[in-house]
Length: 449
Ligand SMILES: Cc1cc2nc3c(=O)[nH]c(=O)nc-3n(C[C@H](O)[C@H](O)[C@H](O)COP(=O)(O)OP(=O)(O)OC[C@H]3O[C@@H](n4cnc5c(N)ncnc54)[C@H](O)[C@@H]3O)c2cc1C
Image 1 (cartoon, rainbow, N blue to C red):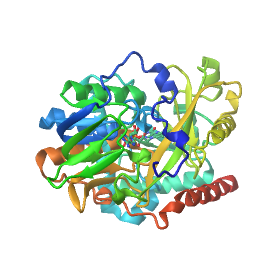
Image 2 (image 1 turned 90 degrees about the vertical axis):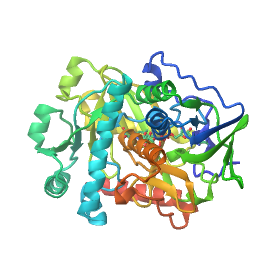
Image 3 (image 1 turned 30 degrees about the horizontal axis):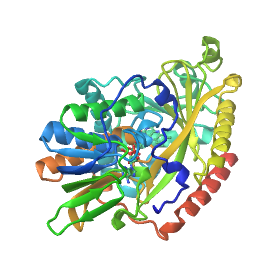
Image 4 (image 1 turned 135 degrees about the horizontal axis):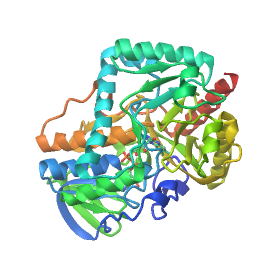
C-alpha cells in the first residue's frame, strides 16, 4: 500500500485522464510496451513526463547512452499530458518581489535566465525533432486584478527590468483592453517574453517519439513498486512484471512522487491539485463582447491565481486551484467554482458551456523553487521536481541538465536556488493541513481585495 497525501482516486494509472488535450491529440501513438522480464541498461528513468522524457531523449541522442523509461500510466499520463500548455518563465511559489527578497538579486537573475533558456529549449526541440505542438501566442500576460495589484505590478516591473535585466513590458488597463482583452478584473498587465502556449500532450508525445527514434526504450503501464541497490552498485528497479538493472537512476515523478520508494524524498514536496475547464468555441461576437484579440496565455494576480488562454479553435481554457483532498466528490464542486469565477471575470460569456474539465497535481517545494541534483549519499541517483506551475519549460530543461550531467560526467552549472534536494517540510505528515489553511487564508484575503 503506497503512502500518499491524497486519495487513491488521483493515482488510477490505468485510467486515462479525459481532457481536451486527450480529445485533440490526434492519432499519435507511442511504442511503449509494459516492461516484461529482466532487462538492464545504463540509466533507468522513473516517470514518463517532460522531465523523464527530455532526460531520455538527451541521453540517447546527445550522449549515446542506453536508457529506459518506466511510466506507471500511459506516456504523458501525469501533469505533462494535462497542464495548461503555458510555456513561460515563472517557476517559483512566490512573486518576483518576494523571490528577490528571499534569495537575492544574483541568484534570482540566474534562475530567471535559466528559465528563459528553458523556453528556448522547448522551441528548439519542437524544431529539431519536428514536434507539432501548436505554438500559440508569443508572450505571457501577468494581469492585475485590482488597482492595488497594478501598483504591485509596477514595482515588480521595476525589479524585472532594473535588477533582473529582463525585457518585461508594462501596459495600462486601457492599453491592455486595446491590445489583449477586457474583464471585470483587468487593471493593467506586465508582459514577459519569450513565452507561448502549446498543446501539452502533443508536445509530450512528440518528446517520447523523439526519444524512441534516438534509441531510448519506453515502458508504459510499468509502475515501479520496489527499488533496491545491490552490493555490486546496481539498482534493481521492479514493476509487477519485470525488473531493470541499471547503474544510474533518474527519479522524475514530480507531483505524483511515491515518497516511500526512497526515504530521502519523503516530505520534501507538496503536491497541489490544479484544475482546468475548457468551454465550447466562442463566436466572433462572444470574443468581441470582452474585446478578446490576443493569443497570449495569461495569469491574474489573485493569491489563488487563475490561468487562462484562448485556444486555436476559439475555445477558452480557464484554470485554478482544485480541491484539497482528491476525493471524487470534490471534483464537481471545483469545476462549478471555476466556471462561476470565469463568468464573473468575463460577464459577456455567461452563455458559454463547459465542454471539458479535468485536474492533476502540481508539485510545490518548501524552498519555493524546483530541485535538481544528485543524492548526497548516493551519487548514482539523480532527481528533478518541484516546478510549481511552470514545468513545460523547466521540466524539459531539467531533464536535459541531468542527461548532460550523466553524459559529461560533470555537474552542469545549475542556478544556486535549484541545486540539491529541497528541504523537508516540518511535520511533513500535516502538509495537507497547512495547504488547506493557506488556501482558506488566501481566499479570504482575495475576497477583501
Ligand atoms: C492542471 C495543471 C496545469 C498546469 N499548467 C501548467 C502550465 O500551463 N505551464 C507549465 O509550465 N506547467 C503547468 N503545470 C505543471 C506541469 O505540468 C508540470 O510541472 C510538469 O508536467 C512536470 O513534468 P514531470 O515530468 O516532472 O512530471 P509528470 O508529468 O507529472 O510526470 C511524472 C510521472 O511519474 C509517473 N509515476 C509516478 N509514480 C510512478 C512509479 N512508481 N513508477 C513509474 N512512474 C510513476 C506518473 O504516472 C507521471 O506520469 C500544470 C500542472 C497541472 C496539474
